[in-house]
Image (spheres, rainbow, N blue to C red):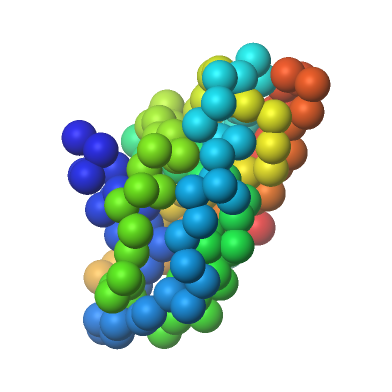
Length: 159
């Protein structure tokens, strides 16, 4: 199960077009990720959606939602994903990231929730996709969120 979560995180990071291979330069540092593995009291919840050109709202219904620690390693993956043209594959992805990440699934209204989140800063990542004729539209949405003192955060993810 953990390996499939890791594969899903990497797949989500790189979802469109032809395949290119990227090498992450930032080494994976378990100490930098350690805060995300501690027990926590916060809840990060939210709703993810995009508005189509015709004004209709499309929710992240059924999409996986990932909670990733905001570390230099994860930031490089996110930056690479956002600048990639087409599908991308990490040549050197580190499966230890799974230990510090959470995954859930958005409901029919694109709502999601992560409980037991330790204090720290995280990237929340999901996708909102739909078909227009023979073409897939939409894409990934990423949002930075910080929780401290066990306080909850409720976010709206859109662009």
